[in-house]
Amino acid sequence: MGDKVNSERLVGTHTVRGRTLEVHRLTWRDAPGLSYDVVDEATGELLTIDESFDEAPTLDQLHELLEAEQQSRNNAPRP
Image (cartoon, rainbow, N blue to C red; front, side, top):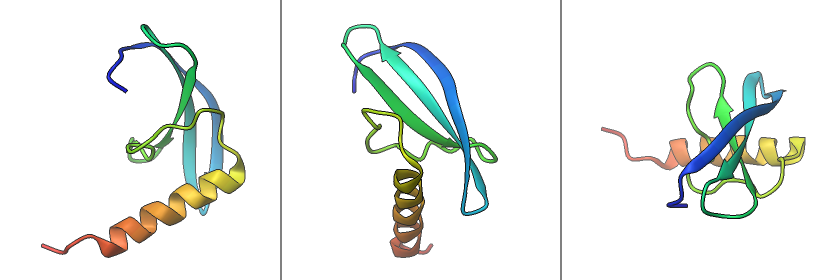
């Protein structure tokens, strides 16, 4: 989304597969609605870089997100 973030607020912290994940709620200056991003607390890495959630993610969605991230890392070309 090319709009600018109006506000960002931590709305949840969950431990999934031994990793602590933060769920952040974002509001947008020039767009209606909310977005939810997921950040790895230890690294600060944004895990929803391709697409934010439209609603707060469930634990099942967080598990799926980490599974997709792991598969992406496994398929990444090695230097």
